[in-house]
Length: 572
Image 1: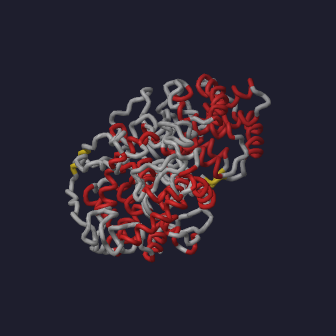
Image 2: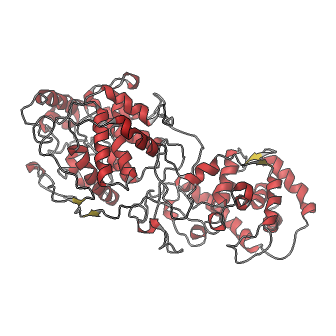
Image 3: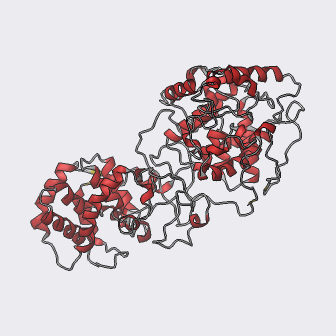
């Protein structure tokens, strides 16, 4: 197998990824999900693409099943031609058209609508959300789908791999620069492996077909709505009102959807820490939610982020629906391209996260820093060892019992060894200076108009690829000595407390601890640890002076702390 192994159980791997060769190089999405930080950044928007989509239609008379017209068109650099008929010569998604598929499809929806209740969905999500069935790569999963035909689909009776490649290749033609969208096209239906014996061999009604919210009234825009009368929720006053257990604008992420391949693949991608953008996850989870993106049903449950992501789903749906045909894709011809997308990773963290440069002790690293002066520091032009000892000794004087904080002061800047030839001799801009999150809008406390992400709508909104309160551990920070030393300490199993690791990773994050910027990304643990960072920052910033420390005098004390909290030799 050429592809990299992908785990379909929750990943706790601490392998990392990282390194653009130039500042503006695009960091891209990827599988396998080896990074514990679900963050992409730097995707370029195709220069020739013009989006003219209007805001999704909201509040239509759903009793009339008003279809959102295709006049909300995209000007595509490639001109995808929408076919007039499906593989059977009928209009696409015409559930009343007489064809050899009609009875199969109708029976499917009768069973689906009877059994997809709120209780059933909760039970299935709990069972399959464990992701404990199997470990395999993306491509291995794709090949599994060769065995299945989707009984809910009135437009195609080919194996699923054909539909995946038809969708992905059609998108690739019109959006050549959006490789994340190509990959989304390829993987969006992989949740259909639930049909396979190794995944429980679920019946098709529990895997495929249009999806819809459970826990509130079944909207009349659902295909074959009449069959819901056999669903226990249809008669339950807790679930049969407009909002049911939800509230207006609560956000689709907080809504339980009918169980199937969409939600399962969403869980697989999310729990395995994919670096696909939020729009891709939205597409994966809601691409079968036709009541919403075709008829505008349930739009009252959406929040602002949903409305933005829905625009991308409208883009995607055209290819998902209209690329189906009897024309086969040459799998072996296109396979190398998609394997390259699956294997793409953010290079800096991958390269340096391997920690395969050298083995040395903490003190050996400290001595290496004698050679360097930090060009980003306006307050000191002494070798780094002087700053480390000044910080540590100042803390030791005021906090004599907090030996972990003394050691944190000594080692917090050791990541600056990235400047050394044996570590690649990175330029100073890639090692020192204030740090900041990437993947969301750059706060006004810095200057970024020359950065490609500044103009990218995927990353230039307040939350970008993150969500409120997601926790700083899940946020990708600009690369430098802070993040590198954090990786070194964590991967070498330091016994320093979490507050120390927080200080090491975020001590240069001045936009946060000096100005309060990006605080909306913090969780409760971050807020507690920030108190210690505020303590530390006072010494990191104001202990700098021309007064030299007598190294040999204090060295025995710090060697004892290093022995207490670290192994003798660390991997760097």
